[in-house]
Image (tube, rainbow, N blue to C red):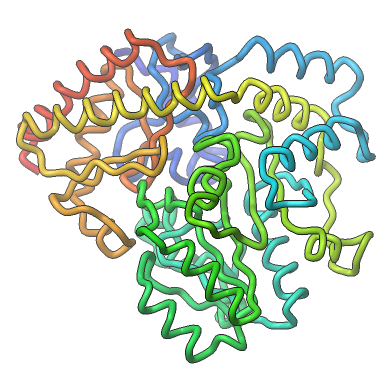
Length: 435
Protein backbone atom coordinates (compact mmCIF):
# COMPACT_ATOMS: atom_id res chain seq x y z
CA UNK A 1 0.00 0.00 0.00
CA UNK A 2 1.49 3.31 -1.14
CA UNK A 3 1.02 6.06 1.48
CA UNK A 4 3.66 8.48 0.24
CA UNK A 5 1.08 11.24 -0.14
CA UNK A 6 -0.08 10.92 3.46
CA UNK A 7 3.54 10.89 4.65
CA UNK A 8 4.34 14.06 2.70
CA UNK A 9 1.24 15.88 3.93
CA UNK A 10 1.84 14.88 7.53
CA UNK A 11 5.42 16.12 7.39
CA UNK A 12 4.12 19.38 5.97
CA UNK A 13 1.33 19.63 8.56
CA UNK A 14 3.76 19.36 11.47
CA UNK A 15 5.37 22.61 10.36
CA UNK A 16 2.18 24.60 10.89
CA UNK A 17 -0.12 22.56 13.17
CA UNK A 18 0.91 21.25 16.63
CA UNK A 19 1.70 17.58 16.14
CA UNK A 20 0.35 17.91 12.61
CA UNK A 21 -3.23 17.33 13.74
CA UNK A 22 -6.25 19.23 15.04
CA UNK A 23 -7.19 16.52 17.56
CA UNK A 24 -4.56 14.38 19.35
CA UNK A 25 -5.74 10.81 18.65
CA UNK A 26 -5.46 11.43 14.91
CA UNK A 27 -1.66 11.64 15.18
CA UNK A 28 -1.27 7.83 15.50
CA UNK A 29 1.16 8.31 18.42
CA UNK A 30 -0.47 5.39 20.27
CA UNK A 31 -0.29 2.96 17.35
CA UNK A 32 2.72 4.13 15.36
CA UNK A 33 2.95 4.85 11.67
CA UNK A 34 1.53 7.69 9.65
CA UNK A 35 -2.05 8.97 9.87
CA UNK A 36 -3.95 8.64 6.62
CA UNK A 37 -5.07 11.85 4.96
CA UNK A 38 -8.58 11.13 3.76
CA UNK A 39 -9.96 13.16 0.88
CA UNK A 40 -13.17 11.38 -0.12
CA UNK A 41 -15.86 9.16 1.30
CA UNK A 42 -18.82 7.40 -0.21
CA UNK A 43 -21.14 5.01 1.58
CA UNK A 44 -19.11 2.64 3.75
CA UNK A 45 -15.76 3.56 2.19
CA UNK A 46 -13.17 6.29 2.64
CA UNK A 47 -10.26 7.06 0.32
CA UNK A 48 -6.90 8.56 1.23
CA UNK A 49 -4.89 11.05 -0.78
CA UNK A 50 -2.95 8.19 -2.40
CA UNK A 51 -6.15 6.60 -3.68
CA UNK A 52 -6.26 3.71 -1.18
CA UNK A 53 -9.74 2.48 -0.27
CA UNK A 54 -10.77 1.55 3.28
CA UNK A 55 -13.90 0.11 4.89
CA UNK A 56 -14.71 2.79 7.46
CA UNK A 57 -15.39 1.71 11.05
CA UNK A 58 -14.68 5.16 12.48
CA UNK A 59 -17.40 7.15 10.75
CA UNK A 60 -15.94 10.49 11.85
CA UNK A 61 -16.23 9.12 15.40
CA UNK A 62 -19.95 8.55 15.12
CA UNK A 63 -21.87 11.08 13.03
CA UNK A 64 -21.68 9.28 9.68
CA UNK A 65 -24.45 6.94 10.72
CA UNK A 66 -25.83 6.76 7.16
CA UNK A 67 -22.41 6.38 5.59
CA UNK A 68 -20.49 9.07 3.71
CA UNK A 69 -22.03 11.51 1.24
CA UNK A 70 -25.59 10.26 1.62
CA UNK A 71 -27.65 11.71 -1.28
CA UNK A 72 -30.48 13.02 0.94
CA UNK A 73 -28.08 14.84 3.24
CA UNK A 74 -26.13 16.31 0.32
CA UNK A 75 -29.34 17.54 -1.29
CA UNK A 76 -30.54 19.34 1.85
CA UNK A 77 -27.12 20.82 2.61
CA UNK A 78 -26.66 22.13 -0.93
CA UNK A 79 -30.16 23.60 -0.95
CA UNK A 80 -29.40 25.46 2.27
CA UNK A 81 -25.94 26.62 1.21
CA UNK A 82 -27.29 28.24 -1.94
CA UNK A 83 -29.04 30.78 0.29
CA UNK A 84 -25.98 31.46 2.53
CA UNK A 85 -23.79 29.60 4.98
CA UNK A 86 -24.57 31.61 8.10
CA UNK A 87 -26.64 34.52 9.36
CA UNK A 88 -25.91 34.69 13.08
CA UNK A 89 -29.68 35.00 13.46
CA UNK A 90 -32.62 32.64 14.09
CA UNK A 91 -33.60 30.35 11.24
CA UNK A 92 -36.19 27.68 10.45
CA UNK A 93 -33.69 24.79 10.28
CA UNK A 94 -32.72 24.99 13.95
CA UNK A 95 -36.40 25.10 14.94
CA UNK A 96 -37.18 22.05 12.82
CA UNK A 97 -34.20 20.16 14.23
CA UNK A 98 -35.13 21.07 17.80
CA UNK A 99 -38.66 19.84 17.21
CA UNK A 100 -37.36 16.56 15.80
CA UNK A 101 -35.14 16.01 18.83
CA UNK A 102 -38.01 16.70 21.23
CA UNK A 103 -40.27 14.28 19.34
CA UNK A 104 -37.65 11.61 19.79
CA UNK A 105 -36.89 12.38 23.45
CA UNK A 106 -40.14 13.07 25.31
CA UNK A 107 -38.17 13.56 28.55
CA UNK A 108 -37.08 16.96 27.17
CA UNK A 109 -39.00 20.20 26.58
CA UNK A 110 -36.27 22.52 25.30
CA UNK A 111 -33.09 22.32 23.23
CA UNK A 112 -30.21 24.83 23.04
CA UNK A 113 -27.76 24.35 20.16
CA UNK A 114 -24.01 24.87 20.37
CA UNK A 115 -21.13 23.87 18.09
CA UNK A 116 -19.39 21.08 20.01
CA UNK A 117 -19.95 18.45 22.67
CA UNK A 118 -17.54 20.32 24.93
CA UNK A 119 -19.76 23.40 24.77
CA UNK A 120 -22.88 21.34 25.39
CA UNK A 121 -21.49 19.81 28.58
CA UNK A 122 -20.03 23.13 29.73
CA UNK A 123 -23.50 24.67 29.36
CA UNK A 124 -25.12 21.77 31.20
CA UNK A 125 -22.73 22.19 34.13
CA UNK A 126 -23.41 25.91 34.31
CA UNK A 127 -27.15 25.26 34.26
CA UNK A 128 -26.89 22.62 36.96
CA UNK A 129 -24.94 24.91 39.25
CA UNK A 130 -27.37 27.75 38.68
CA UNK A 131 -30.42 25.54 39.21
CA UNK A 132 -29.13 24.01 42.44
CA UNK A 133 -27.06 26.84 43.89
CA UNK A 134 -24.25 24.31 44.44
CA UNK A 135 -20.73 23.92 43.07
CA UNK A 136 -19.70 20.26 43.31
CA UNK A 137 -19.63 18.18 40.11
CA UNK A 138 -19.24 14.40 40.10
CA UNK A 139 -17.81 12.50 37.13
CA UNK A 140 -16.39 9.03 36.52
CA UNK A 141 -12.83 8.07 35.65
CA UNK A 142 -12.53 7.22 31.97
CA UNK A 143 -15.66 9.12 30.94
CA UNK A 144 -14.81 11.99 28.61
CA UNK A 145 -17.02 15.06 28.49
CA UNK A 146 -14.96 17.36 26.30
CA UNK A 147 -11.89 19.40 27.12
CA UNK A 148 -13.36 22.00 29.45
CA UNK A 149 -10.92 22.45 32.36
CA UNK A 150 -13.14 21.30 35.22
CA UNK A 151 -13.87 17.97 33.53
CA UNK A 152 -10.46 17.11 32.10
CA UNK A 153 -9.70 14.99 35.14
CA UNK A 154 -9.05 11.26 34.67
CA UNK A 155 -10.77 11.45 31.30
CA UNK A 156 -10.56 8.68 28.73
CA UNK A 157 -10.22 8.99 24.97
CA UNK A 158 -7.25 11.06 23.80
CA UNK A 159 -6.01 11.69 27.31
CA UNK A 160 -5.72 7.96 27.94
CA UNK A 161 -4.21 7.41 24.52
CA UNK A 162 -1.44 9.90 25.25
CA UNK A 163 -0.90 8.55 28.74
CA UNK A 164 -1.82 11.83 30.45
CA UNK A 165 -3.76 11.52 33.72
CA UNK A 166 -4.69 15.20 33.39
CA UNK A 167 -3.61 18.08 31.18
CA UNK A 168 -0.99 20.72 31.93
CA UNK A 169 -2.61 24.13 32.03
CA UNK A 170 -5.55 22.92 34.10
CA UNK A 171 -5.25 24.56 37.51
CA UNK A 172 -6.18 23.11 40.89
CA UNK A 173 -8.75 25.86 41.20
CA UNK A 174 -10.51 24.66 38.06
CA UNK A 175 -10.84 21.10 39.36
CA UNK A 176 -11.30 21.62 43.10
CA UNK A 177 -15.06 21.28 42.72
CA UNK A 178 -14.83 18.09 40.64
CA UNK A 179 -15.02 14.69 42.34
CA UNK A 180 -13.97 11.65 40.32
CA UNK A 181 -15.39 8.22 41.12
CA UNK A 182 -14.81 4.79 39.62
CA UNK A 183 -17.27 3.98 36.84
CA UNK A 184 -19.86 1.33 37.73
CA UNK A 185 -18.97 1.59 41.44
CA UNK A 186 -22.39 1.78 43.10
CA UNK A 187 -20.95 1.64 46.62
CA UNK A 188 -18.66 4.59 45.92
CA UNK A 189 -21.54 6.67 44.60
CA UNK A 190 -23.73 5.87 47.60
CA UNK A 191 -20.91 6.74 50.00
CA UNK A 192 -20.24 10.10 48.35
CA UNK A 193 -23.92 11.09 48.46
CA UNK A 194 -24.14 10.00 52.10
CA UNK A 195 -21.20 12.25 52.95
CA UNK A 196 -21.65 15.23 50.62
CA UNK A 197 -25.07 14.92 49.01
CA UNK A 198 -26.12 18.43 49.97
CA UNK A 199 -23.09 19.89 48.13
CA UNK A 200 -23.53 18.12 44.79
CA UNK A 201 -24.87 20.16 41.88
CA UNK A 202 -24.70 17.42 39.27
CA UNK A 203 -23.50 13.95 38.39
CA UNK A 204 -22.15 13.67 34.84
CA UNK A 205 -21.92 10.33 33.13
CA UNK A 206 -21.71 9.01 29.60
CA UNK A 207 -24.94 7.13 28.92
CA UNK A 208 -22.60 4.23 28.16
CA UNK A 209 -18.88 4.80 28.44
CA UNK A 210 -17.34 4.96 24.98
CA UNK A 211 -14.14 6.93 25.56
CA UNK A 212 -12.21 4.20 27.37
CA UNK A 213 -13.49 1.67 24.87
CA UNK A 214 -17.05 0.39 24.97
CA UNK A 215 -17.94 -0.13 28.64
CA UNK A 216 -21.70 -0.37 29.27
CA UNK A 217 -23.17 0.72 32.59
CA UNK A 218 -23.79 -2.13 34.99
CA UNK A 219 -27.42 -3.15 35.37
CA UNK A 220 -29.16 -0.51 37.45
CA UNK A 221 -26.18 1.88 37.58
CA UNK A 222 -27.76 4.75 35.63
CA UNK A 223 -31.02 4.25 37.49
CA UNK A 224 -29.16 4.53 40.80
CA UNK A 225 -27.61 7.82 39.65
CA UNK A 226 -31.07 9.14 38.78
CA UNK A 227 -32.53 8.08 42.13
CA UNK A 228 -29.69 9.50 44.22
CA UNK A 229 -29.59 12.85 42.42
CA UNK A 230 -33.35 13.24 42.80
CA UNK A 231 -33.24 12.32 46.47
CA UNK A 232 -30.50 14.85 47.22
CA UNK A 233 -31.65 17.73 45.06
CA UNK A 234 -28.87 17.35 42.49
CA UNK A 235 -29.16 16.95 38.70
CA UNK A 236 -28.19 14.03 36.50
CA UNK A 237 -26.49 15.08 33.25
CA UNK A 238 -26.53 12.26 30.72
CA UNK A 239 -23.84 12.69 28.08
CA UNK A 240 -25.28 11.18 24.90
CA UNK A 241 -22.84 12.84 22.51
CA UNK A 242 -21.70 9.38 21.38
CA UNK A 243 -24.88 7.36 21.91
CA UNK A 244 -27.58 9.90 21.13
CA UNK A 245 -29.72 8.86 18.14
CA UNK A 246 -27.17 6.18 17.24
CA UNK A 247 -28.25 3.52 19.72
CA UNK A 248 -31.94 4.04 19.00
CA UNK A 249 -34.46 6.63 17.87
CA UNK A 250 -34.22 8.29 21.30
CA UNK A 251 -30.64 7.37 22.11
CA UNK A 252 -29.48 5.31 25.08
CA UNK A 253 -32.17 6.73 27.36
CA UNK A 254 -34.87 5.89 24.84
CA UNK A 255 -33.75 2.27 24.56
CA UNK A 256 -32.73 1.52 28.13
CA UNK A 257 -33.82 4.35 30.42
CA UNK A 258 -37.46 3.94 29.52
CA UNK A 259 -37.23 0.19 30.18
CA UNK A 260 -35.52 0.73 33.54
CA UNK A 261 -37.87 3.59 34.49
CA UNK A 262 -35.37 6.39 35.00
CA UNK A 263 -34.49 9.63 33.26
CA UNK A 264 -31.91 12.38 33.46
CA UNK A 265 -32.42 16.08 34.11
CA UNK A 266 -30.19 17.29 31.28
CA UNK A 267 -29.00 15.54 28.12
CA UNK A 268 -26.10 16.50 25.89
CA UNK A 269 -26.03 15.57 22.21
CA UNK A 270 -23.61 15.84 19.31
CA UNK A 271 -22.25 13.71 16.45
CA UNK A 272 -25.39 12.40 14.71
CA UNK A 273 -27.42 15.61 15.19
CA UNK A 274 -24.95 17.43 12.92
CA UNK A 275 -24.60 14.67 10.35
CA UNK A 276 -20.87 15.41 10.07
CA UNK A 277 -21.07 19.17 10.63
CA UNK A 278 -20.03 20.85 13.92
CA UNK A 279 -23.27 20.85 15.93
CA UNK A 280 -24.22 19.81 19.46
CA UNK A 281 -26.96 20.54 21.97
CA UNK A 282 -28.06 20.46 25.57
CA UNK A 283 -31.67 19.51 26.27
CA UNK A 284 -33.91 19.13 29.28
CA UNK A 285 -37.06 20.25 31.03
CA UNK A 286 -38.48 23.72 30.55
CA UNK A 287 -37.99 24.39 34.25
CA UNK A 288 -34.22 24.04 33.92
CA UNK A 289 -33.62 25.04 30.31
CA UNK A 290 -35.59 28.27 30.57
CA UNK A 291 -32.96 29.54 32.98
CA UNK A 292 -30.77 30.10 29.92
CA UNK A 293 -30.60 33.65 28.58
CA UNK A 294 -32.62 35.35 27.24
CA UNK A 295 -35.46 33.47 29.00
CA UNK A 296 -33.39 33.43 32.19
CA UNK A 297 -30.13 34.77 33.57
CA UNK A 298 -27.70 31.90 32.84
CA UNK A 299 -25.55 33.17 29.98
CA UNK A 300 -24.54 31.14 26.94
CA UNK A 301 -23.97 32.36 23.39
CA UNK A 302 -22.29 31.45 20.12
CA UNK A 303 -22.24 33.09 16.70
CA UNK A 304 -22.42 29.77 14.85
CA UNK A 305 -24.79 28.03 17.27
CA UNK A 306 -27.70 26.57 15.31
CA UNK A 307 -25.87 27.19 12.02
CA UNK A 308 -28.40 26.65 9.19
CA UNK A 309 -26.17 24.33 7.15
CA UNK A 310 -25.27 22.16 10.15
CA UNK A 311 -28.91 22.05 11.23
CA UNK A 312 -30.00 21.05 7.71
CA UNK A 313 -27.44 18.24 7.70
CA UNK A 314 -28.54 17.02 11.12
CA UNK A 315 -32.21 17.14 10.27
CA UNK A 316 -31.70 15.31 6.99
CA UNK A 317 -29.68 12.65 8.82
CA UNK A 318 -32.30 12.11 11.51
CA UNK A 319 -35.00 11.88 8.85
CA UNK A 320 -33.25 8.75 7.56
CA UNK A 321 -32.73 7.24 11.03
CA UNK A 322 -35.73 4.95 11.14
CA UNK A 323 -36.38 1.54 12.70
CA UNK A 324 -34.90 -0.26 9.69
CA UNK A 325 -31.64 1.67 9.99
CA UNK A 326 -31.28 0.85 13.69
CA UNK A 327 -31.88 -2.82 12.96
CA UNK A 328 -29.16 -2.67 10.32
CA UNK A 329 -26.70 -0.99 12.69
CA UNK A 330 -27.32 -3.64 15.35
CA UNK A 331 -26.91 -6.42 12.80
CA UNK A 332 -23.67 -5.07 11.29
CA UNK A 333 -22.14 -4.37 14.70
CA UNK A 334 -22.92 -7.93 15.81
CA UNK A 335 -21.60 -9.48 12.58
CA UNK A 336 -18.34 -7.55 12.60
CA UNK A 337 -17.74 -7.59 16.33
CA UNK A 338 -18.44 -11.27 16.91
CA UNK A 339 -16.55 -12.21 13.74
CA UNK A 340 -13.42 -10.34 14.79
CA UNK A 341 -13.67 -11.82 18.27
CA UNK A 342 -13.84 -15.29 16.75
CA UNK A 343 -10.71 -14.59 14.68
CA UNK A 344 -8.83 -13.41 17.77
CA UNK A 345 -9.94 -16.45 19.74
CA UNK A 346 -8.96 -18.82 16.93
CA UNK A 347 -5.48 -17.30 16.87
CA UNK A 348 -5.18 -17.54 20.65
CA UNK A 349 -5.22 -13.80 21.37
CA UNK A 350 -6.62 -13.01 24.80
CA UNK A 351 -9.24 -10.30 24.54
CA UNK A 352 -12.58 -9.02 25.74
CA UNK A 353 -15.14 -8.11 23.06
CA UNK A 354 -17.51 -5.54 24.54
CA UNK A 355 -20.62 -3.80 23.31
CA UNK A 356 -22.67 -0.79 24.30
CA UNK A 357 -25.69 -0.96 22.04
CA UNK A 358 -24.22 -0.99 18.51
CA UNK A 359 -20.96 0.56 19.70
CA UNK A 360 -18.24 -1.99 20.35
CA UNK A 361 -14.52 -2.39 20.98
CA UNK A 362 -11.86 -4.95 21.85
CA UNK A 363 -9.74 -4.91 24.97
CA UNK A 364 -6.57 -6.96 24.67
CA UNK A 365 -6.98 -8.50 28.09
CA UNK A 366 -8.58 -11.81 29.09
CA UNK A 367 -10.93 -10.19 31.60
CA UNK A 368 -14.09 -8.16 30.99
CA UNK A 369 -13.64 -4.42 31.55
CA UNK A 370 -16.09 -2.46 33.69
CA UNK A 371 -14.03 0.59 34.65
CA UNK A 372 -11.05 2.73 33.66
CA UNK A 373 -8.51 0.97 35.88
CA UNK A 374 -9.29 -2.33 34.18
CA UNK A 375 -9.19 -0.70 30.73
CA UNK A 376 -5.66 0.55 31.42
CA UNK A 377 -4.45 -2.99 32.12
CA UNK A 378 -4.91 -4.09 28.51
CA UNK A 379 -2.02 -4.86 26.19
CA UNK A 380 -1.94 -1.76 23.99
CA UNK A 381 1.07 -3.07 22.05
CA UNK A 382 -1.05 -5.94 20.81
CA UNK A 383 -3.76 -3.51 19.82
CA UNK A 384 -1.22 -1.48 17.82
CA UNK A 385 -0.14 -4.54 15.85
CA UNK A 386 -3.76 -5.48 15.22
CA UNK A 387 -4.66 -1.94 14.17
CA UNK A 388 -1.80 -1.54 11.72
CA UNK A 389 -2.46 -4.89 10.11
CA UNK A 390 -6.11 -4.01 9.54
CA UNK A 391 -5.17 -0.60 8.15
CA UNK A 392 -2.67 -2.09 5.71
CA UNK A 393 -5.47 -4.35 4.44
CA UNK A 394 -7.87 -1.47 3.87
CA UNK A 395 -9.88 -1.47 7.11
CA UNK A 396 -9.96 1.81 9.02
CA UNK A 397 -10.65 1.49 12.76
CA UNK A 398 -10.02 3.96 15.61
CA UNK A 399 -6.25 4.50 16.15
CA UNK A 400 -6.55 4.01 19.89
CA UNK A 401 -7.27 1.12 22.23
CA UNK A 402 -9.51 3.48 24.21
CA UNK A 403 -12.16 4.22 21.61
CA UNK A 404 -15.43 2.69 20.52
CA UNK A 405 -15.90 1.43 16.94
CA UNK A 406 -18.80 2.58 14.78
CA UNK A 407 -20.75 0.97 11.96
CA UNK A 408 -22.95 2.72 9.41
CA UNK A 409 -26.10 1.79 7.55
CA UNK A 410 -24.08 1.70 4.33
CA UNK A 411 -22.00 -1.35 5.27
CA UNK A 412 -22.63 -4.27 2.91
CA UNK A 413 -22.24 -8.02 3.19
CA UNK A 414 -19.05 -7.80 1.13
CA UNK A 415 -17.69 -5.17 3.53
CA UNK A 416 -18.31 -7.53 6.43
CA UNK A 417 -16.52 -10.34 4.62
CA UNK A 418 -13.57 -8.05 3.85
CA UNK A 419 -13.27 -6.93 7.48
CA UNK A 420 -13.45 -10.45 8.85
CA UNK A 421 -10.88 -11.78 6.38
CA UNK A 422 -8.54 -8.94 7.36
CA UNK A 423 -9.08 -9.69 11.04
CA UNK A 424 -7.84 -13.27 10.60
CA UNK A 425 -4.57 -11.96 9.19
CA UNK A 426 -4.36 -9.24 11.86
CA UNK A 427 -4.91 -11.73 14.68
CA UNK A 428 -2.12 -13.92 13.34
CA UNK A 429 0.11 -10.83 13.15
CA UNK A 430 -0.45 -10.21 16.86
CA UNK A 431 0.72 -13.72 17.71
CA UNK A 432 3.69 -13.46 15.35
CA UNK A 433 4.75 -10.15 16.95
CA UNK A 434 4.91 -11.83 20.35
CA UNK A 435 3.95 -8.65 22.19
